[in-house]
Image 1 (cartoon, helix red, strand yellow):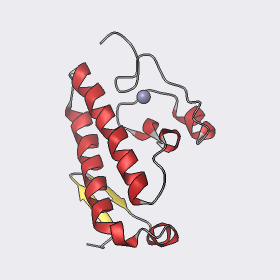
Image 2 (spheres, protein in one colour):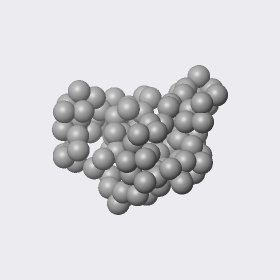
Image 3 (cartoon, protein in one colour):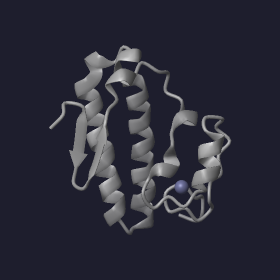
Image 4 (cartoon, protein in one colour):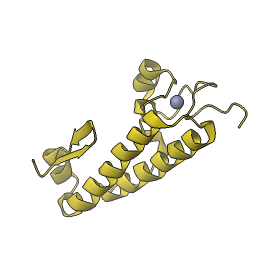
Length: 120
Ligand SMILES: [Zn+2]
């Protein structure tokens, strides 16, 4: 397995060596892989989870992880840069949000099981 690849269940991601180097983050490679494997683990849990409260909690865990990942890439944690719409089960408008990235004024669907603000 490539040393930049993270695989959890059926999901995998490959970290960009160029991006790591450009941000002086090579020394954080192992920590980053750890964060990404937690992230993929949460994605897998979201696939399985049906309890609405637990889904919201998993979405919060993802937000925390994204902040940690940003720090490991030597960025200031900034929620505007999180592509939260890439999560499984997210029903927020993907194309619109992709277009608006990274302005931070995103479209949140009220009935999104992860990000909606319906009654809990
Ligand atoms: Zn959503």
